[in-house]
Length: 130
Image (tube, rainbow, N blue to C red; front, side, top):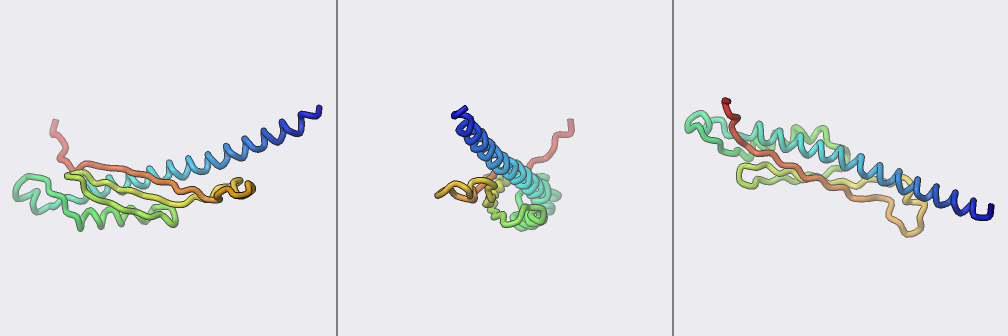
């Protein structure tokens, strides 16, 4: 009977850790989805159309990629920072944001936020006619 309060405290502590981890993982999934949408937009809309029509080859158009990614950025969670770059014909989008933790504030010295990062890429390429 004397161990029951300690057991309840441990169960409450584990539940608090689980909730905070669920918040972080949920935010990370949301950020990964947003990064993938932005990378896909950049890859699909970031082709130099004039070069494709005249030479039949893909050539990235950085300004078109920038516009497409900024268009997708409207759906990003608040306070999201974004960077993007080209690696050859691959558009790489990196996002990060701070997530507020629910129960960590109750622990002295613990951080009340955690930074979540996501990286996604999409390749500029012509689809196969097959």
